[in-house]
Length: 211
Image (cartoon, rainbow, N blue to C red; front, side, top):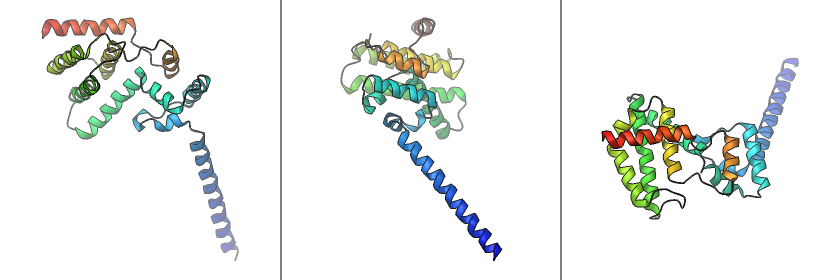
């Protein structure tokens, strides 16, 4: 009889803990901001303190969750996360490729994204230094010389920096309101530094001279 009582107690305790864990998980889901749930899986996780700071910023400016999501996806941090997500996808699809072979696939994918951007509405960002025609010419030149470009990269982080510098040139990170600067500060990845921009310009100059 004691054996059965012990089993029943064990089952009851297990059920209690399962219920408690389920409730905790549900509470966590309910407390997660809507904008965070909208992020693609490749952009998660974000540190809890950063989530709280971003949510406080959203509340401060009375922004909707959708606008907060769009702001985050317009940051250099998001561009960086996208490149790493693209790299992980390339590793799954092309397990036989070496590092530079994978980098090539990632950069080609980004070139396609830029082409789609240039062709989508027939115009570039209002703060872009490039017209749609100039952007397409730039992309075509990069595509034709992609192997030469890769020679200037010592790590995948160089590819990320190169990509962010082009996005900067396209005007995608400029925000006169300064709100995106606050978002960048929280996420820990701002617009290109002067040193990064000079590095990017030097590569473009070498590309022009060597191509």
